[in-house]
Each structure stands twice: as C-alpha cells, then as structure tokens.
Image (tube, rainbow, N blue to C red; front, side):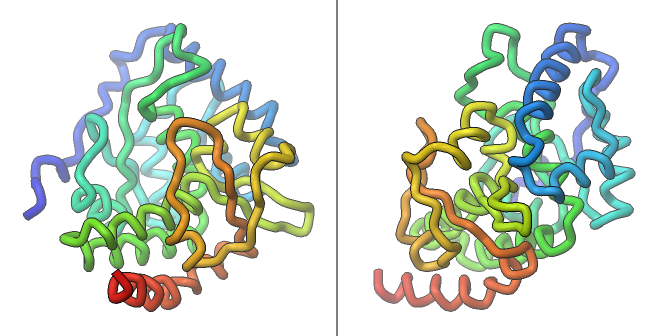
Amino acid sequence: MLNRRALEIQAQHYDQYQPEEHQIWQILYERQMKILPNRADDAFFEGIRLTGFEPHRIPNFAQVNANLKKITGWEIVIVAGLIDNDIFFDHLKNRRFPATTWIRKMEEIDYLEEPDMFHDVFGHVPILSHPDFCNFLIELSRIALKHIGSEEAIEYVSRLYWYTVEFGLIQTAEGLRIYGAGILSSPGESVYALESDKPQRLPYEVQRIMDTPYIKDRFQEQYFVIESYQALFESIPEIEATLDKMLVRG
C-alpha cells in the first residue's frame, strides 16, 4: 500500500531561501547554459523558455507548475529525498515529478553525491514540456507499477529509466544532442557524453539496455541514442514484451 502522506503536495517555502542559495542556483544555471548550446536538444531549451526559468533566482514551483500544467498537465511535487519505487512511479504515472527543495552548498558546487534541486529541476523539468517524452514516462511508470512486487522487473525498468530519462542522447538533424537530466545538470558529463572517445554511443535497443547495469559513481561507459521522442514513446509495447520475456528467462 502506498504511503499516502508521501503523496501529499508539500510547500516550497520560497521566501525562506537565502541570498546565497539563489546565488548558487545562478552559478550552476549560468555555467550549464554556457556549456549546453549545440550539446543539449532544442526541446530542452524550449522547455527552459516555456517553464519560465530564470538565471538569477531559484524557480518558484507554483509558477513553474502553472506554466507546465498548461503545456502537458505535469507538475512538480516536493519530496524530502529519495522515495520508494511504488511512490516514485505512482507520482510519474499521474504526471507529478518528485523534486527536492534543497540546493547544494557552495563548497559542494562541483560535486554532490545525492541529487539536489538543481539536478531535479534544471535537469528534468524542462523536457517535461514535450508531450511524447511525457507519455513515455507515464507508460514506463505504468509498467513499473504493474510489476512493483518484483525486484527483478523494477531493476530492468530502472535501467530503461536510467539510460533514457537520466542519461539519454538523441540524434537530431543538427547532430547528436543530450536530453538526459543526469547529463544536462553535469558540466563534466555534458562534454564527455558527446566528445570523449571513451564511452560507446549505441542505438536505442530495449533488450540491450535491460541487460546493461547502470553506473552511479562515475561517468557512463555506454550511452543509448534515440531517433526521436515519438520513437521512444512508441517503444513501450516492445518494453512490455521484452520485460515479460526477461522475467520468464529469469
């Protein structure tokens, strides 16, 4: 059973942010916005515009939600930190993106173990303005909830989430671009993912992704490239069929 208290929308307490916290947001925001042109997908920059992000201040979730709901019906909901899989995927299935409200300290500006608001909001929220991407996220969450009692199934779904939503690349007419939030919010990986000769950049392939454990403590060794967000969404039946086959395989 879901913890209903964890599903409640909490307050951001926007007026309690200190000047230094807004300054940290600005440093992180401006650094990424210098790095990401010609690296991030156009959908990300369009999402920045549509959601109303500004460089000099932390986003006010109430304002962002008002903008986002008009576009795709999504909203940010506040969580204290990492949450259980059932709660996480229930939020996503119902067009709610869980995000923290705390931002890293100045001394942590270049490295942080646990995702903070900058990762959650700057990295994830702009792309939630794209309908096909949102529909993929909803359907992937539906699949996860269908198998929530199976650790094996959730591991496979988590790999799909990791190599798309967090660390996905997209092939565009202008070249290879970033759409994954884990890359978009990282200055080092934004360059590494596209320009280093170390990682593999592979076509999006459901079974191969399910067979690929993800990496949390260093840059990725493999990135998977989608052709479009529509194609990503249209892979949902293949994901369901492959997952069923993988679970039978054991």
